[in-house]
Image (cartoon, rainbow, N blue to C red):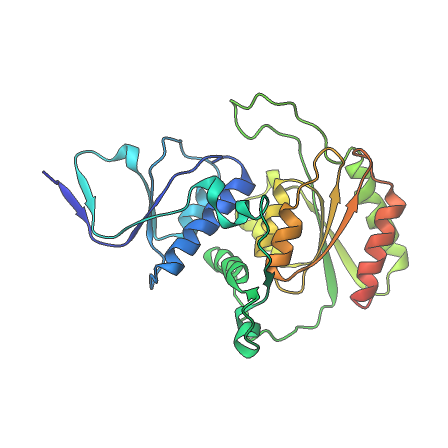
Length: 294
């Protein structure tokens, strides 16, 4: 016998790499898309049908959806009037784009409304707006450019970590001289730029998710070594410029593709090994700032 009926639309989600930011963002996006393509008028309720425990990233799940529950905590028989199965982790749109081409460029919904183009998508831009709105940040739908008196330059710092206690792999540095690069850019900017810049030390591991989202949305330029922290560019605003520093140990298209699907300007510096020559980074950064009028 059925003891309880759930009347409201509910997403059923299976998490795989539940402690890794990149994989969790792909799950957030898939859950969002599942609710959009099924035409749900409001943010759905969500049930985790995996056996994982609560993780630090739960804060965003709870912000994005109307409620979050765990199937493993249910007792008795429960039936859903309207259940929606979210795509599994390695079958999501963001992850599949890494292994097979999804030839699509990004734009804002406003831009596509004014200039329809079936080769472009606004889905990732809308998703980024949803993330910002979920944490209480205003979303400017008028797209009016605002004068910038100070450019925030966000340097996303990478701290080597093991995403899960059962992880048995070796952790390799993605940027061996990260502090040197950060200090060099900050010092050079103080003496060579026409406009004011504020260098933000993006120690995301020591910031709340709301603070991380705030830093992303306020940045004119986001710089960082290839790593999970850069996944937050999915919440970046339309005019943000991305500069990724890529070690030869890990060359994957994650953030180039997210930038493409969001319509963001993207630059990369490919290293030989994990050491970045500061002057090379400064030269690329100088070119980016020149294009911003600095």
